[in-house]
Image (cartoon, rainbow, N blue to C red; front, side, top):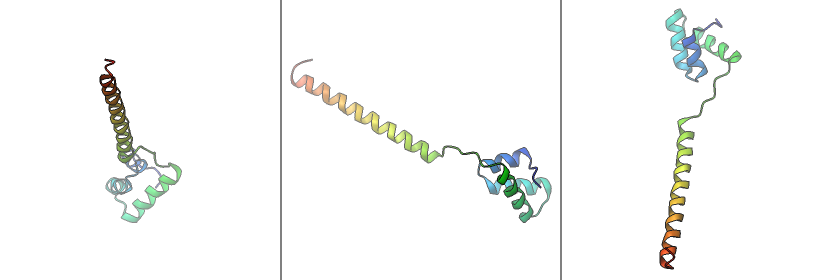
Length: 88
């Protein structure tokens, strides 16, 4: 069976293979092996969609936070030096 329902296709392409297999089993009554084979056959012709993982997103936000902290520290140091030399 290469024609999966849209719900099963969405799960398979999102990398949720177990969910896709469960959906195929529930909708068709196939056994576990046949359902797994159907999902795998679908994925051979329809590769999974690559998404940005939450770990990568957290890494980006941490880098942004580090950059912001460094910028604040530099500005604070510059203002402190200006006060020290009575330029402000």
